[in-house]
Length: 64
Image (cartoon, rainbow, N blue to C red; front, side, top):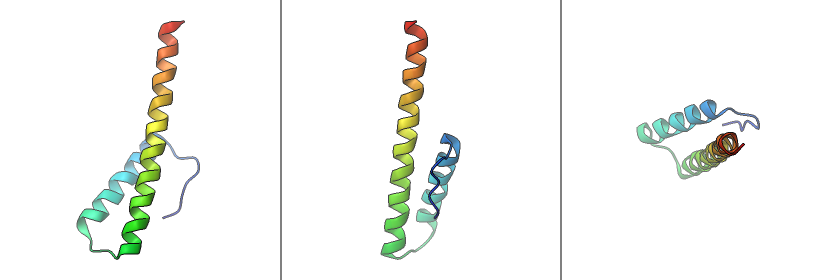
């Protein structure tokens, strides 16, 4: 799985869903499982950061 530096929130969510689907439907070795879990963790972190930024941007609109 290639890592994208600039990925949108919706692309990250789609990739997370794909990873989850593959984990639920396949028997994979420990190394593959570890890589998928690591990638999902990176994507979840990215999504959290984007959501926090969006929340901060919305908060600024109401403060001004």
